Every structure is written in structure tokens, then in C-alpha cells.
Length: 215
Image (cartoon, rainbow, N blue to C red; front, side, top):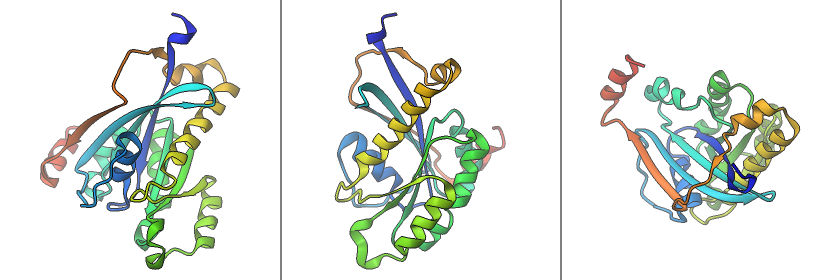
């Protein structure tokens, strides 16, 4: 297989409480669209997009998981094998900020230490913000990950989130051993559309609980 036929595929999980803008974030990044109406993710949504980072073609496979506790046992299975993580919270939702350490722990329990970025969304609603900037910086330092601020609605900072993670992963790949490089799943690049969406949904919490008992 020729080197020019290879591409790098990265699995990225986006986690955080419901209604912080996770689904809107990957829709904005992968499809360039934004929907005002909030629709709760039931299960897992998947989108992908290829970008060029540091001279490499990188395919980002983005997994948006439900932010409700009743789906934890289901969505945790989709964390496994992730190369990077977005920890998302809303500038207008104190609970979503306070929950970030527990979300990071959930991902670490399945993936270990992986490149992670802390994202404060909805910075366009600055007048409604309930998170002090210094507090956010302190949390970022405590978690050992970079803090980025976005407005998915206004398309501010979204690209930077995924470029940062892709660059981090490439850096890890270049300085580590062959096993890590193999784990990034270099494969023959085939022509595909710029973004593909797939959705794994449950019609109700009861259905999720039923499936959870079989996982």
C-alpha cells in the first residue's frame, strides 16, 4: 500500500450534560448547519469529517453521546477505543460545569488518559453566563486540558476544537511507538462524502434499560 493512499482515522467522543450543545457542535463542524430547536440525543449520534492538519489528512469520527444518566451504561460502551475527547459545558448552565470532572472520569474509566479539551459553549450569551472566567481556567488546569470557548450558534471557535485535538493526536503519534501509530488505524483512503451521519437511538428510556441489561 502506497504511503499517499493512507489516511489517519481518529475517534473523538463528545461528552457532557444534556442541552450544552454537543449535537449542534458536531453538526456545525461536519455539515456547517445549526438548528435552533433543542432535540435530546437518545442513544448515540455519529458524524465524520476529513480535514488537513499539520500536513496530514485526518478523518475525525465524532461520537455524540446522550447526556442523561439513564443512558450511561449504554453510551459508555461507545467511549472505548476513543483517541480524543471533548468535555463540553454551557456558559449558562452551572450544573453542566460542575459535572465536568465526573464526565472526564467516565471517559478515563474506558479509555485511560487521552488528549482532551474542555469546551465552554454558548459564549454568545455572555450576559447570561454563570461561570466566572477564572473558575473555568482553574478547572482546566486541574484537569490538565486546554480550555477553548465556542459559540456553535455563531460558528465561533468550533473548528479550533477539533483541529487542536487532531494536532495533539498527531503529536502523540509522531513521538510514540509503532503500536500507537497502528492504533490510529491507518487505512486505504476511499472516496467518501465530506460528512456521513449515523444515529443509534432508543425510542424510550425503558428501551435503553432493556438493552442495557444485555450489554
